[in-house]
Length: 233
Image 1 (tube, helix red, strand yellow):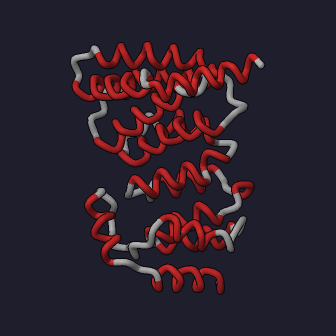
Image 2: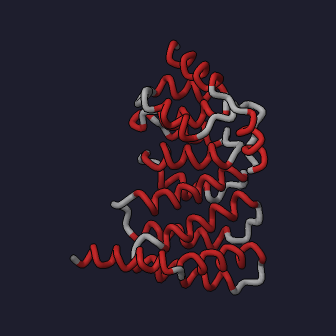
């Protein structure tokens, strides 16, 4: 495919060894990476939209940046549940996981289902993906009812003792974003955060304490009051 070759050559032409070193410091695998920044990838991807075959080929290449590119180039209407299951097993870096969930997977009709399923899986990046999906849906899905997010809060309680770094940070992220969605969920998420902060388990304690700090900040409170006023107006 001509477009595939063009993209790989473009990524190779922009490779940056200094960026690779920085990526490695942040825990990103670099054995098949070029060190191309995300803004550059996004800029390149503007020329290739809704191309499902191209996205599949880019993903199969295994290149780090090509996989992020694939999440920007794919046609969400053609993404299948099986594709999501195949791709999630390929996640080996937190940034590919997060970009894929935010750029593509959250927009599919399977987003809630996968958030529920993946958050209970044992694989570190699959489990992270489940909670990243929750966070992305909390921010971007305006039509989802509060009850769906309340079910996510129950899962957060269940999984709050997973001490793996990429999981606990995603659990914390999901909790904070759910709490910033509306006043009702704010109260529930803040109450849950305080409960977790009092637990003896160090991971649950950290998740809860950090979420309390964020949700009680002036920025979060002003955001909630603004949303509440918009709903009432």
